[in-house]
Length: 188
Image (cartoon, rainbow, N blue to C red; front, side, top):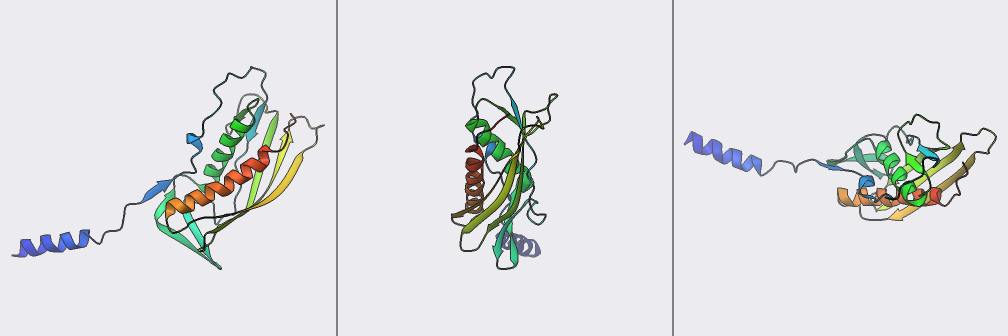
């Protein structure tokens, strides 16, 4: 009888267990890169690690409710959010600027251009409104060339009732940023 009661209690408690933790990325590896061969003399664009406010640069998937940040109980980023944003920007720029070798890794040679991005705001609220504010600079290795600076604010609406919806909304905002950066004419 005691054994039956223990098995019944275990079965009931296992039904109350939390869903398994899910890990998400912004999808950068899934973006097709140009498969064409670049000449050895192709200029290099180094995408520096994107900076985010400290409270955002974690693996937590967050939603803002006024002054409060709510962390997802079952979803996390597969890496720090800044790394995911850096990878997604590099993947998009690799597509949009096919004449450049776009990398996030240091190379033996000095890159022709370096992209520095600072995201000062990246918020999703409980109503599904997303906002991203960033400034960025394309910094040429030739110090006689001007630095190209720009700033932008982006918004999008989406669902935030699921973690996959939050990820999709975040991806949309970062892709808007990538498209704006890509619209600049790079000058090595």
